[in-house]
Image 1: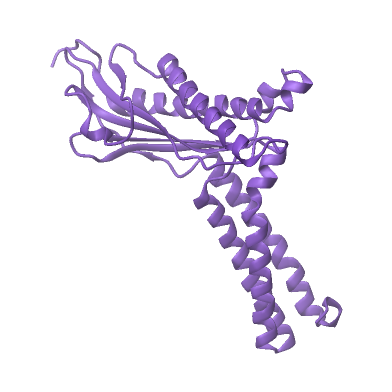
Image 2: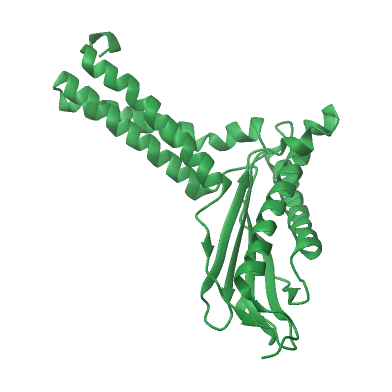
Length: 276
């Protein structure tokens, strides 16, 4: 069946529905990517003569992505692993230099996130996990959301065709075909972003050690850090590893800034040394 054979009303709905839902899909990508729904629960602590000690660890769950198409699969894997190792070290250095300490906080890094809660120091009150969850690719759960919105579009198209033609089976066929197409399109989004952008996602999650309650949770995603890249030469600007480093610098700055704001406004109860 061709588009020309559809009744005018059905064709109009068919043309409008994908546009509207593609806009929704794009908004989902941008909103979910830039920042997830944050958790920010006040937890007031008194320092008295001691600092509030925050144990933290850094880990990566980023999935392998092609960085250089001229390299073999194994060479890309090794390059990706080196980049991840360097990225985790960069996050460590940034936290060490920029995390809010004031006279009230002390950050103490644990060597690994594995069984980290069993390794916390006796004086620690809060535990922070920083996770590099995307480095050159989009998080799987966000990709599934996009595939899901594509599936919704497919169902809408199927319903429109079925209603316009009074042919349920034709509508189901259109829906199935569209869902297959959307899955392939969004599942290839890593390739598209990898070609033209340098997506990086950094997430943070803080709990109280005593209650294990999540008191702060946030994330930040960027597709490209143009502010940093425009300062580079043409050759360096085109290097995918350098692009990813630039994106990492931006997500570090944004996420740690939010963490510092939370600590300053929602954790502090009274200055160090103030009367009880």
